Length: 84
Image (cartoon, rainbow, N blue to C red; front, side):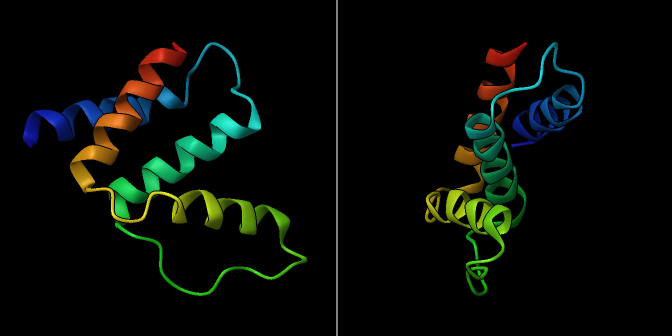
């Protein structure tokens, strides 16, 4: 797990210096994978109708419910690598 954690941490750092900004759907996927890897399954209430950004983030994270920390870390690392 420590090698995966190191690769994940490097991918998090690399995500801040990508050659170009990803589209919104990719950004949501990056966010959701990061949250799943670092915090586990989403909890709390879904944001209200007026908070469209918060709602989109919540929904993207909720789609990953049940994915293990290791799976989310690997998927995040692979996604960031593909965007370099």
